[in-house]
Length: 331
Image (cartoon, rainbow, N blue to C red):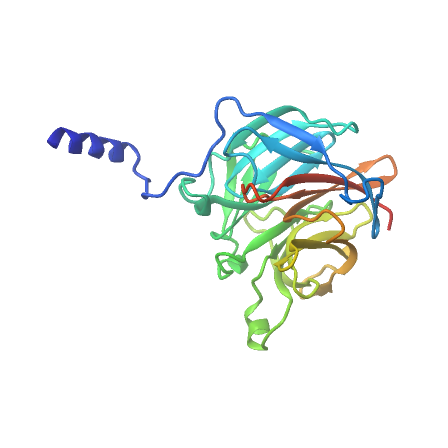
């Protein structure tokens, strides 16, 4: 018995951060990415219109590994895609106009808040990237932190707990983040409101921050503003459009359709300290349209066309799907 206790002690001593909780699943030695085409309207496969969007095709992504899924953030640079899960695992792949993913690579953020053992300690919910350098920024809910990484996501180069984000709730913090072309950043809380807004009573506006540069860099100025989503919805991600508007993905959870979403746009030129900006709905993801827990959005260009990519978080549940949908903005 004494020998057994010694072995247990040595195991625990070798894993000092163990908390008694099961570790979040990480990708194994040979993960595989599979993809199958999906229609926007399951009952009308030829239909492609959706508000101000034209459907160009989409995929249901699957993996052979328990760590697959849960993607809540995405960046797209040319034909290079990065999908980041809310437990800090990620997949990177290349995909052209044929919508066939290839050259997939799988990984995990080795550095970040907490121990990285349970999902909650490293709840990565939003990601932005500098297209010139590849530098990436990741916003973590629960800890309300922003970390900066080199382009391959293998090494962190800085981190910060922005003062304005410190009082944000642990499960309603930074859910949306976008880097604007002029170098500024926006971060929008999922459910948190500014204290004076809460004092006035019920409301739908969300606390948001405008950084005048890299949020992690010392001396970067941070100013408050507010985003007003459609009633009943919460923002889940944002991206800047080529014309300077900002597209914001918003999600609702409830009966009878479980997950539905709306896509809104706000005027980027009106984005300034103290502003309250209301989203204008340009597309709805609700029956009969394919709908899911959409949490990630990215904008690219193909010739003169503005392309929007939207991805879903399946919560690693067999009841849900990981979708990656492609649209052309016709608004």
